[in-house]
Length: 166
Image 1 (cartoon, rainbow, N blue to C red):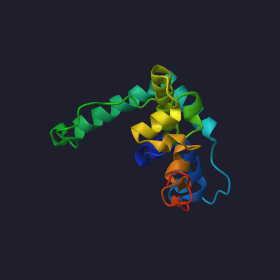
Image 2: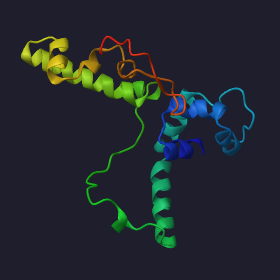
Image 3: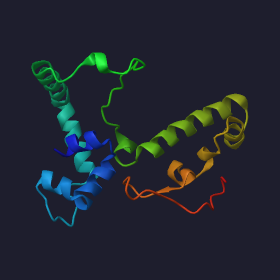
Image 4: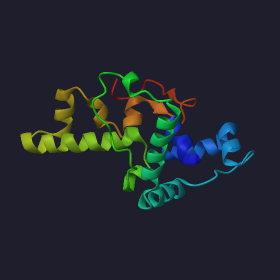
């Protein structure tokens, strides 16, 4: 159930773990109402997801969803946006993806691109970032550069605007 809730809310593993303590709705669904400790750890959630995938249960879940949609006529592909052109494999990240959120994972990838561009052009990463208009990549983390704190949407706030990127 946790994976279904996580997918529905489109949140990271860390956020899912936190919601097992902070959100009574999650606690009710997961059978841990009133819990003071998380129902599971990020690593446990990731390991469960990996076992689910290894047993092809992720594929079976998708197949069963399609079967139900056909039987109930509750899904009409003609109502999808006309500009939808691609699908993304949503299988989980391995390694850093199990402990870092999407913002920072994308930041790591972007920094690798900057490093490659710097090497190709003989420039510094700082120079590449400034010329490309992405000084955000020079901060310690993407979230720090964006001045985002907290891990759940209701707790996300802007930090004081004392960032060197301003």
